[in-house]
Length: 505
Ligand code: BES
Ligand code: MN
Ligand code: ZN
Image 1: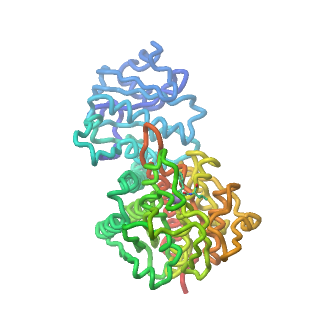
Image 2: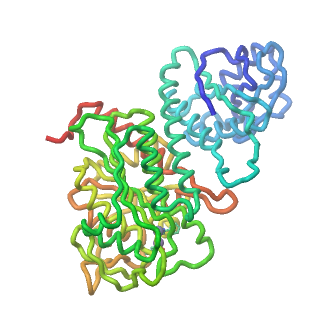
């Protein structure tokens, strides 16, 4: 899909379709009113028939209006004007895309940037439009021998904007495209099955991403991890014949002295649970257990496309969690890279075991902030469902930044507490800590475990178990939380603006 920005009046554009909004109770948007005027009242006439009442999610295609250059005018219902907020705007974009994709149009112009959306600027509206459309346009067709051709007609989207708004719209469009492409990369990797997307494959993809954008990529092998003493990470990979990888990628968008943000992504390419084997139903979905890793790669892709003036280091611990003769047993005690010992009471709580060593490893980059992203606990789905990612951390300003990014991006997150009182659930009679804290507050105790490896680092943790993929008929990776992470980094980039406070001495 290609995108461009145009300032032409809606009735003059020679495109396959022009999309304009109608508010509930049949009130025309400004662009619709202009089209109506040009066509001598044709739209008002149409709305009067009651075929388009402006209900959210509704759409109507009108053909060959008089004195209008396009052959199709698509009316999109916006709902009540006063209620047009972030999510109603996104819904309007989705409806517009769906309606146009259902016609034979090869290109379409959307006049939605002019809508007043609770104070959002033109850049935000352009960003959301491009991101939503790329999101909808994504198909995983790699293994379909006869790919479906639906919606293949539509190739080009024009975002119509008023005079003077072009530069701002362009800026938003670029960000939306970068986020959309980052999400596509994350989805593609997430959707690949465990027999293809192995730790080795992830490492290759990281190398390829590095080549595309000039990132420095380094991959540690099992023997390197042994030398370093990553006993916790290594305990997870023991039952698998797939070699583990610890992947690091450095994106240098700012000066050398600027300390990086470290993004750590859980990269379990398949999680059987190990000896604490998972039950059979839906176990296939554990191929998505590397979506944290995929979101780190997707975010780096977006940063590089945007040439964001920030430094980011991605750290991806990757392995497979399998049962077998060599697999870790419940009760085994291991020594992490930090020196702290862990009693593994449940081999299915493996994400924290690879993340803790990655957190310790990340200290060598002297990060200004550390964010880990992981499909960590089923309990997070119980707490927040599939709407919000769980956010926890040890640094108020960092958590606030992430929450703000979640809000602006629409890629929601919500905080859970990390109070000291929860820590005792991790007590062990045989080691410094256990790797599980029992059923109560499972998402929080998982974060408590990680917090023991994040001391002195401004750190936050995103549990994306409920948001990284969809189950059921629409099963597939979502590309979340790439939008959240890119917004977080964009905000940092504009705050630091190449100079800035927290520099390395
Ligand atoms: N990858 C899973 C978490 C998960 C489960 C995400 C289901 C999405 C859907 C993780 O490795 C895991 O198995 N966690 C256990 C932890 C428990 C043993 C303390 C869980 O949530 O059951
Ligand atoms: Mn598990
Ligand atoms: Zn897992």
